[in-house]
Amino acid sequence: SSAVPPLQNDSWGKQYSHALFKAMSHMLCIGYGQQAPEGMTDVWLTMLSMIVGATCYAMFIGHATALIQSLDSSRRQYQEKYKQVEQYMSFHKLPGDTRQRIHEYYEHRYQGKMFDEENILGELSEPLKEEIINFNCRNLVANMPLFANADPNFVTAMLTKLRFEVFQPGDFIIREGTVGKKMYFIQHGVVSILTKGNKETKLSDGSYFGEICLLTRGRRTASVRADTYCRLYSLAVDNFNEVLEEYPMMRRAFETVAMDRLDRIGEEERPPGLSTATPRAHRPP
Image (cartoon, rainbow, N blue to C red; front, top):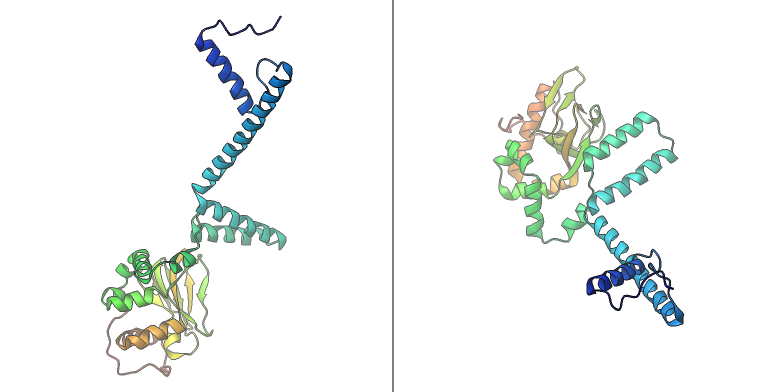
């Protein structure tokens, strides 16, 4: 006698439940059901059903995994990148304090998400690219009098050439005596300008520094140290000159601020390239 009674005379509910149980047993790859197959036809049908069920189960798991990963691909990309960084630090046996600073830098620089921003912006049209850059730098423009009172075309030309950078407390962003290849705009943070005479000047949100070297093509006249975590935008010297060739009035504004700063730090000899006849205006905040 069979362990399972025949279902021909049972209600449709019991028949359906038994059929559903057997189908789910095959689909979920947990066996052939409550009753072993009888006869070769039943055996082959059961094997075919189990193969189809295993295939559907594997496809379901694969699609579910892909869906979960795609929900936050930027975070996954950051985690994969940081795993490489950890392996790099371990391979070179970096000291613990250096590893901690690198970890904190990545946390502040990328905030747990990583995008190929350069590639994304490169695929967009120029109007869309300029719109996004202006939106991303809106706080910088709002806090900086130089940009707030300038020609919007000049502001856009400058913003499209800026590069975002992060510095940690104690980092020397600029060292006195080195050749200057960049100037910096402060989006958020506090820096100290250190000179030979032990004078110390603080600059914060909306200020800029490093333009003296770009104007005079000389060496840095002071050191600049980050006092807090600083989110800055840098501008390379070639891009700086390219933009100011189109807007000569803004070059005069930069020269005015540069002369004022040189006076404050006590430079007796004015470097060549700065006009002494430039009117005093646009003093740094």
